[in-house]
Length: 441
Ligand code: PMP
Image (cartoon, rainbow, N blue to C red; front, side, top):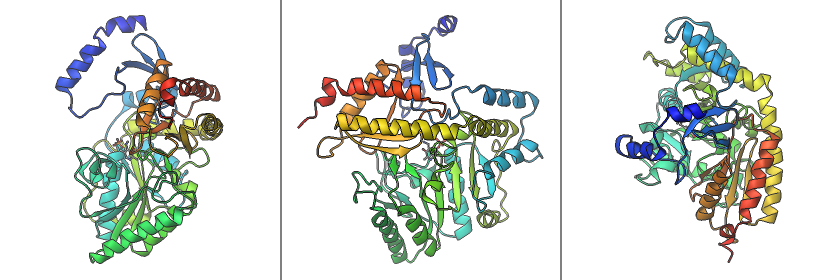
């Protein structure tokens, strides 16, 4: 690593200066004093000085950074052949089969694409083709990707900085946040489902019908919001009765991260018409997919070819297979469940000791810790402080939520109980620091 550091002589400041001038002006950087990562290994990242950081952020490096089997699968296939999906190839069929084995029978047609945004973009096209409609219902603070259509259904963007509010065909329900939302408590599901019905009614008033309802099973950018009991099944029911389709955005939560279940929607005992997946599927390689019912797939195939230059190429598919096999063979879903449960219980104990932790929520290795004062007002400065101090202890964490006060924990699934203990130990230490108590009223 020393050799590597010598080879990479550019200082961090030089890299920052060049970025500022010549890379996209709206790209952001993590931390006031950004770090340069030169290597990854399992749940760890290393900077140019060989310093090791525990990664609790990266839900893309699903089976571990630079996982040997995944890297090898990609290298071997890349050396042999990479081409598009217009030729027959075993690998694309194998990956489709492996994915479908994890899903209910009704969901059995796969389209491979290259990113979560592309997956949701395609889902929107499918919805339009299948229903002939274009009104979409989505959640407040939801994020579904960076393309035009995806931004149009992402309140996180159009209601945030630089945004211009909801477009005419987008209909937003309040964030179904049982802790601090419009309705509170885990029995608030029916009330939030009524909000979906209200949007359907509003669409009807315009003499139109809803095309689809899209939501994540745990709303990630919203601050790891678990959907309250009874919400999703009722919401799906209302949407379907009105002639719309139901989409589950599994880009962040899918592929075993939930622990109890392989996919997020399975937590709520519903079956969507379309699911979109991305991030973890390629373990860092751009691979994503849309899975839908035969009926939707047939309506989408209306004569216009769907072609995607890179989607479903043999290299991406070999990598996807290696990821799914690793999750299965190494029991990573079970690990997410066990380590996630341990962490959640211990974080709740920490909340007893430090009332700044207002809520601990999530499933498996997809958890959120919300920092608030005694009146449930958000504490973004303290959240920033905590994340910066955790970095001093070489633990990387991220923040989200509309008020920037929710710590997110979504590490590679190889995260161990020992890692969880280390995380808890530093959290406890920093929570006791003066700045963390500076909100006391
Ligand atoms: N959906 C969700 C829920 C996401 O979190 C993201 C990315 N953060 C996307 C879609 C878009 O995925 P990508 O960045 O791979 O295009």
